[in-house]
Each structure stands twice: as C-alpha cells, then as structure tokens.
Length: 125
Length: 239
Image 1 (cartoon, rainbow over the protein chains, first blue to last red):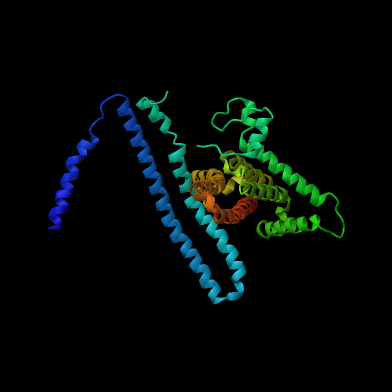
Image 2: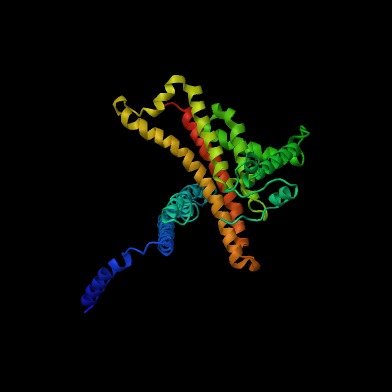
C-alpha cells in the first residue's frame, strides 16, 4: 500500500515538474518571478550552509569539551590550564562555522551575482 | 542593509560634513567619513589617552594607572615569550598594539550607538595583511635566502608539489585571520540588532551582550596568539 502511494507521489511530482519549470511569459511579471526565485534559492542555500556548519561545529566542540572534562576529572589540579587551552580550541573550531555564517550573509545581503541577475532579468540597470 | 543610528555620524552630520552609508560613498571625503574609519580614530584616541594615563608619569613605585598597565603589558609579554622564545622579543610592540586595538574595537561595538571598527572587513583585512607581510619580513631577516627552504618541503624532489600548497596556505592565512575576526564581530552585531527588533522592550539583547564581551576578548586573544605562532614559525629553522 505504502509503496503504491510513494510510487503515485513520485509520478505526480515528476508530472508536475515540467509545469513548475515552464517558462514564464516574458515581461515585467516574469522577470520579477525570476528574481524572486533567485532570492529564494539564495536564502535556502544560506540556511543549508549555516545548518550543516553548525552540525559539524557542534560535533567538534562536543568532542573538545569531552576531552577537556575527562582530563579535568582525571587530574582536577590541571583545570586552569586545560580550561584556557580548551577555550582557545573552541574559538578555533567556532571560526569554521563563522566562515559559513559569512558565506550565508554574503548570499543574502551582498550576493555578487544578484545584481547581475537583476540586470539580466531587466529589473535594474 | 539598513544603517544603524550612530552618535558619531549624527555629530559629524550636524557639523556639516557629508556623512553617507558605506555603499553610497564616492568622493574621498565621503569615504573618509565612513563609520569604520571615524570609529577607528576614536579607538586610537582612547588608546592614546589610556597610554598617557598609564605612562604619563612613570615612577619606580607604580600606583593607579601605571599599575594596571604594567600588569597588562607584562602579562602579554610573558605569554608571547613563552611561544616565540627569547629571540622574538622585538615583535612585542606589534603584537601588543594589535591585541589592544582589536580588544578596544570589539568592545566599542557593545556600546549602543557606537560601531565596532572590526565589524568591517577592511579593518580586519588591514590587520591580517600587516601580520602576514611582517611574517615574511621576519623570515627573510632571520634566514636570508635560505628562507625559501620553508616552502620546499622535506626532500628536494617534492618541491613542485609542496611549493604551491605552501603558497596557498600563506595566502589563506590572510583570509582566515580577517574573516574569523570580521565574522565574529559582525555576527554579534547582527544578532544584537535582530534581537533588538524582536524584543528590545524586554531587554532581549542583554544576555547576548554579555556573550559579546566574552567573544570580543577571546577573538582579540586568538588574533594575537595566531600572529605569535606565525612569527614563531618564520623564526624557527626549516625542518
């Protein structure tokens, strides 16, 4: 039953795709829709980028904190030095997800291709 | 993007100077009056005043401002000597200046109505380029022509493979140093702005601002630490 439903859904989606991808009528409305679609894709890409970066960054930071806590539990006297080293390491790991944040900000606010696309679509000169 | 309300911009605008946003600045004067430039001048003024307070009248038995500054400066110097070794003491002024400048810049963004100069890629890129260029100056000064061995890898026949990788790595240092600082500070400011628009009436940005104080210190420290490590790497012998 479920297989039949999934097959049906796939066929439906496949059948609808040409409709969604159909070329817009030329003119102002089509250009606007094209530009909106471009912005939507950019926002989606930014969200995915920051999400994946946060995933990896979280795993890495978790491993770093685990190591530090295990070290402190084994030798409580070393907590000061371990904490400082861990904080430096955490800042280094976090900088990776900060790079992804910069990429997402560029995608949304300062997309280098955005202006070009707008000119191409006839929205800006 | 929207332009935030900055006290300094309003003041300069009242004085009759052409203050515009970063995107519309075309003439030289307008570019000189962009917020990150004017606030860099403010940071420099603060640092000069602090230095004057600390070292205006140096006494044998320190008191007040001199005491605080001796703790800060000797703390940075001892930490730096621990990483670069005794022969790297001459880079201390650069490291301490960068660390204090970045720290004050980061903290300036925490004051409402002021702008952090490090929340602009130009400021951080300038700092990073200074550091990376000075790394190579140190390398040539310490090793002369043999500095090229740093780029050639362990065995001679691997040179064509190692050389491009090393060169890309050295250019990536500029990118990573500048974007790490810029992204942290700018992201902080953006989060503060978004939280303020969402629930500024209920002091929603306040916890984030405490986090910002912490991040500002950590990032200034990281920048100084990485610069020290790059300098130490240029000073040691090729392996």
